[in-house]
Image (cartoon, rainbow, N blue to C red; front, side, top):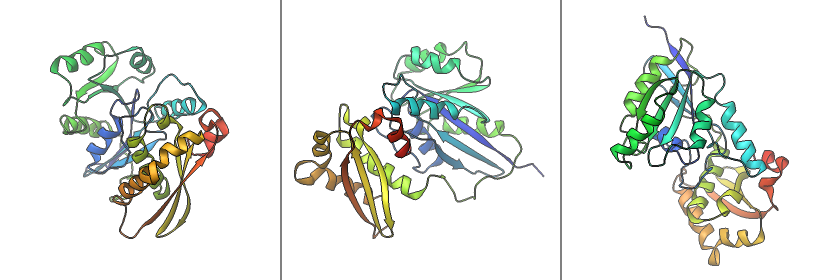
Length: 281
């Protein structure tokens, strides 16, 4: 009888490399919020895949970048912690963006036998994909996989490689569990995802969300911004933005949920380490 295998796979890369979209595609289920804004992922998000005789626990991480605030410093530390004591690290590169100094900086810190994953193969030209593969050809890694988190191209081959890399070990999560993100955190993240879709410039970085009351089916979620002017943008004309955010989030929740959204100003919170920690980042 074959021994059961289990282990951890961390996805690291620059902001907007496509890590969260790829993870959701691999799992066939949304466990990480997605947007076109940098630094969408702010915490380690674990997604669990349990095919026969093996369990892979994927760790989605914040994009590694040059920090300009206490929040940025915390996000980088979260991502770097996720590369230690795991079984495989995947460097996720955006095929539509040139391989740059930021990518090289992350690559230099990778453990041996990491995997290079070139995402957005559906959007990139074959020449762009080949360019990323060529740029990383000298890295001391185990394999390279061009993939698409939208179409699923290449993901089966990637998962098969990762399955083979898992060590013998017990099943870590129940068969039906796809993430260990608590429900309250997930709902706060869904709110932030919808806000990212309707805000622009510096505002996405200034938004934090947290559930402050949970008496099912009533849920209260606070939206924190850094300035009074941002509060007005989030609420929108006659409350339109907040209304649309609430509708979009409720569509992803069980029927009957009563979601209350409140906007609060906390001056320059992302530049204060204690505030960053208090909001769970």
